[in-house]
Length: 337
Image: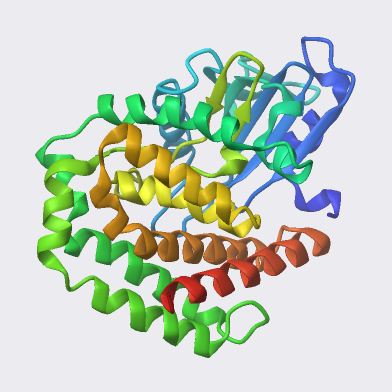
């Protein structure tokens, strides 16, 4: 990426000498909504000033608010990792964290998790097995049991509310049809499966009354770290309650879909089997394929957004679009199941 496409404060903090603590190297990771600076023992996550409708970080005030929400919500599963919201302030020579100058941005400050435990890397190394899945299930079942619920949250499990999310995906991805990742036939096949499923009013109502919770919202391997003594499930959805207030089936379907995506369908089946066994929620099996399809499509859509974002370099864009194509193929498979 050309350096001049980055905000000045990001360029500034790519220099290891610009931190108060000792930093040998700084790594920058980008998504369609964030800049993530990995600096020594800490990570600084800065939200991009974007507005996708379902996500609005357009103003500094909104970005500060959602930084605080990110800290609050992620402490449910990672109480020791999410430290604080810090201000990025301007100085005479550059920028500082929590300085006395004018605030130009906000960041979520986190402890760096053990990078060797990132689940995506363990999967790539062939080091995820049933014991790994057991550790994750042992964390998730009590999390959902204790998660907030009630009438204001339950309404997000209705046909109407779920339909908003599903149909929005089709609306937002339609402009990208036949541009390399999503074909018209895939679009029509997946839509023809999802829309009729949403007509099952009674099924959704039953789930809403018993299984809709304040969930994680983004439960897949990229947001799981397996330390030697602790499982970290991080980076939940903070920016939109309608993505986080959902059927537990939707949350666990995301990780099951992700394991399918990584050619680990046997472990995906084992994960669902163990989760149902421990939670007693056999009803989620009726919803599983629908939500797997939905989650695969969401990941494909995000790949489209990243791949077509003007500030993203060519290699990242190409990788994002290749991943999107694979996700849409998987969604199509679920639609035909």
